[in-house]
Amino acid sequence: MRTELIFTGSELLLGHVLNTHAQYIGRRLSEIGIEIILHTTVGDEWERMAMILRQALTRSELIITTGGLGPTTDDLTKETVADVLGLPMVLDESSLARIKAHFAERGVAMPESITKQAYLPEGAHVLPNPRGTAPGILIEKDKKIILMLPGPPSELVEIFESSLTPYLAAWASRGVVTRHRIYKLTGIAESAVQDQLKDLGRQSNPGIAYLVMPGEVHVRMTAKAGNAEKAEKMVSDLAEKVRRRLGGYIFGYDEEVLEEVVGRLLLDAGLTVGIAESCTGGLIAARLTGIPGSSGYLRGGVVAYNDSIKRDILGVPAQTLREYGAVSKQTAVVMAEGVRKLSGADLGLSVTGVAGPSGGTPAKPVGLVYICLAADDGTCCREYRLPGARTAIRQGTVNAALNLLRHYLLAR
Image (cartoon, rainbow, N blue to C red; front, side, top):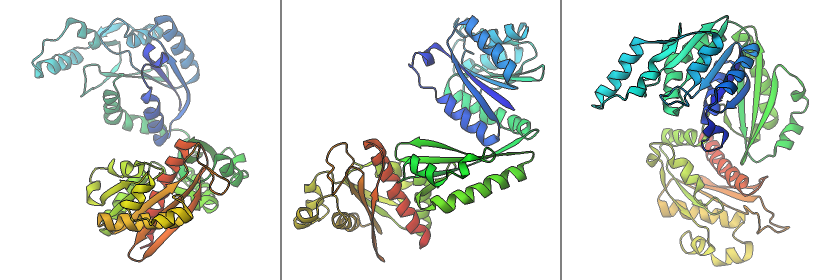
């Protein structure tokens, strides 16, 4: 099912609002197995919206619009769709009743302008909106499907998950089935990844695509087939070939969140961790505490950005700092052991490195990072040469540190 997404709203064109809908809908449709061929953003202008919609109807079977379902004069999506399809706008009494109940429950008088939201193109199906007054709308006409979703993200997500996921999944299973697998890598540049996979990347089905993020490279494998079993086997076979070549750099899979995986492993093992951070400035602790319940395994952390903190709080000897420097295996080891003792945690995790853009030397270039994990059964310290600029190096350090912790917990 070829699909187009049309995002309406002048605020999107002007950059006043970040288009999070594109990311959310794109990810969810991909998971369901529906192919998106085009994104279009159009302002609140009737003729342009009508032009974009007519063009989309010539290319795609499924068209999803976001925004423009409100009560104001610049909310034109429903009216434009009705005009292009040659459908009259009619009052949907059930929608009006739900809108009135929405205001009554809050003890607020309903503005007359809100009634506009109860008018729908004739023959449209209502997608209930538990979080707002503008219902979603589904139209099936001439073997085309048009879905209209409200602009507020919480309302859009609620309607999509409650009303559209089963409907779209049923459509997706009727034709070509698409399956995806994603490997998330750190510590390696995109060019190096492509060099490792250059022979695999020449094929189209199954195929490979790359996404670069700060400190990460995502390898996305896609397979299409006439049934789910065949598509799954195709993508699994390709994924295994990729894993054999790049396994040492992989820190996550598909929608997996590394800090959540690490947290779960710590809880299962009944272990706690303390964090000592230099070049990451607290980013590791922030990632871990972003997961609810992290107080069950994170004891605390120290941002030892200045050498005096490494010395006075974590116990790194002044001689070690003078002889080997702050960015060294020797310093990282003492930092990990020091924060483990200081926090009373079972494990101590430390990072120190040169994030740049300045501060690098031939002996210690930008991107050099040491990550150390201290435990009862020994201390492990690794050296990394991370690619990219400052943000990428810092994020890459966080991923590598959490991945080192993950590997330790899995091997216990």
